[in-house]
Amino acid sequence: MLRTRLPHWCLCSIAVFFLAMPGCSRKGATPGNSVNVQLNWYPESEHGGLYQALTEGFYKDAGLEVSIQPGGRATPVGPELELGRAQFAIANADDVVIFRAQGLDVVAVMAAMQNHPRCIIARQDSGVEGFDDLAGKTFQRQAGRAFVEFLRAKKYLENVQEVPYHGSIASMVADPNVVIQGYSCAEPLLAKQQGIEVNTLMVSDLGFNPYSSVLVTTGKLIRENPAMVQTFVDATREGWKRYLTDGAKGNKLILSINEQGMTEEALQFGAESMVDLAMPNDASIDTVGSMTSERWQTLYEQLVELKVVESDKVKADECFTLQFLKD
Image (cartoon, rainbow, N blue to C red; front, side):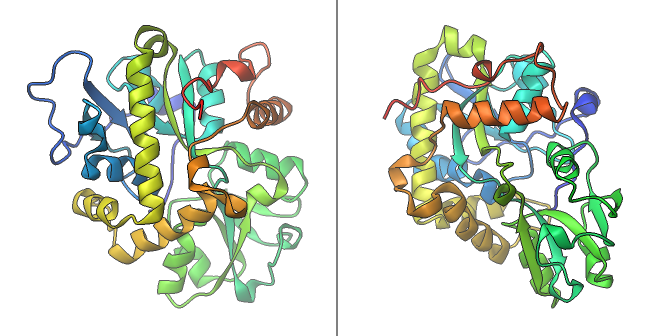
């Protein structure tokens, strides 16, 4: 549930954990139909569509034998794709732009979450009801992340003491002057379970809103086997549509394999939160997975302005393709 990911520059040196999924062993698979998917975090509601597709048999029906590989606190998503150990992966849109700027051939093919769950969590008795109220507080954050640079550029972190975030809400629970980074689909529930009511400040409300739960692959695979990419995207979108309608089967599978303290209540809370993130403003279920060139261009320009990436290292239209989202 809690997220502490290391900066991208050190990911290549971190070992990744592998886990065989029930019913998705690659034994006997023929070349071309065996697919390995790398997650960017431990299995949870952010990946619900993949697990729903797996347990509903959508991948099997499409002729694909799929293995899902969990992530962790420092998962080298880009390198796993680059080295061919995974054909697909899950990432955030800003990560995709950063990967491309680092020279990795990572391309987004669909985005499950239209709004990003990134937020700042503050106790209700802290006096923090908006970003303008952060002055004088201690902010636990992961240094170097794009959203932190965005908040700093917008002057919301002036007179704010910034300290490292270690993946726990404990300091906020103990001290109302501490605010923490979080995901709207996770940390608010953890706080409530400890008897703490919180205010959730969504970074997306400020205009920094990268797609989340983005399905990515490589340009090489898109060129060499576009039919397989299309098949996987189609099955994954169906998995997300089913998960957002009734995610019980996907959650049951996630709960059976997540060994990081995941609970049924947390998964249910996350799944319910995903609905508004995936279909904001009462969007149709048929829009799930969609992306636009305009959103990617805006994100790219923001990351360049924040000096997170250099304009001569990457271009917006290199980071994504809409060819598999024709409907």
